[in-house]
Length: 173
Image (tube, rainbow, N blue to C red):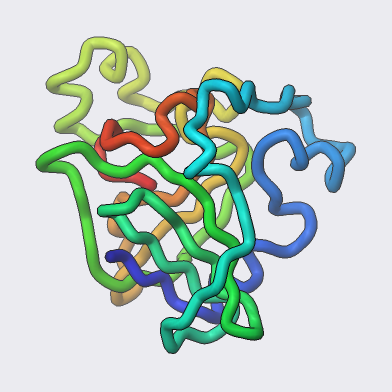
């Protein structure tokens, strides 16, 4: 499990920080219009939905169940919004508690040095890939920090909806 602290996360879901096709609905100045995802490529188990949530967490807290590949945004009234997510493949998973140290719209992606060393496609972007529809971080990213330090893990969008529900990433959610 990954538990992301409450206070910093609550602001992350405010209008103007919505992912996917809804992003442009709330921010007409968004530079990259996004088409809705083809839901036929996503298992219905991973569709966004409101579900009962009986854990003792404050509203605004994000819980990631890496085994089930679900992210829960805790709401009031013992409910949560459940999202399907892709998680780290074998050897790249992470667990623990973190806080959102930074939020970014259309983030720049800079692959870590170990990814650059093992992946020729990532090596092309060793100095960073600008934000945009081709960027693997998608439209928005939450940067996870522990003790004031960037963990290098992110909760972010995707330009590959078929990865939702899979263990395929290099550790990000």
